[in-house]
Length: 106
Image (cartoon, rainbow, N blue to C red; front, top):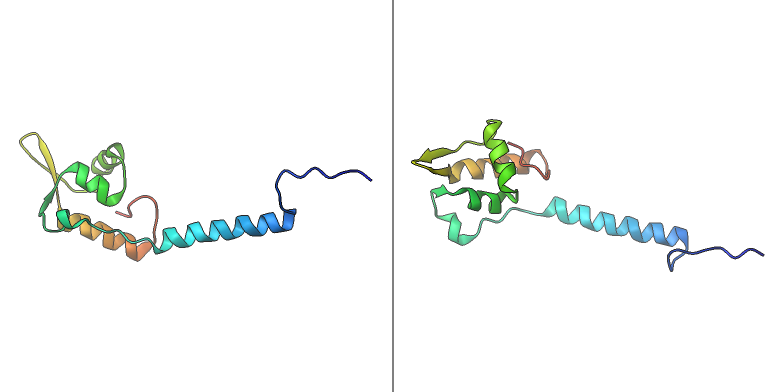
């Protein structure tokens, strides 16, 4: 009788069941995740790019791409860029209404 090679310590059906359960856990976590604005930022009217990146969980290049595409409003005071907190909150509300994507639904 030929010996079957096992790559994992579980029979294939049990292994697939465990993988499926792990994937469901990750998806549930992502779907049920809500964006929490830190208290230190909750009272600020204007936010700087670093704070917006932290809130939306995106990188600075992604933030500037969204600005360039016209999907995110910002303004400059001298050489510094700012974002209205109300605009960022609106983006979060839109994202909550239309699904939980990795990219902001702007």
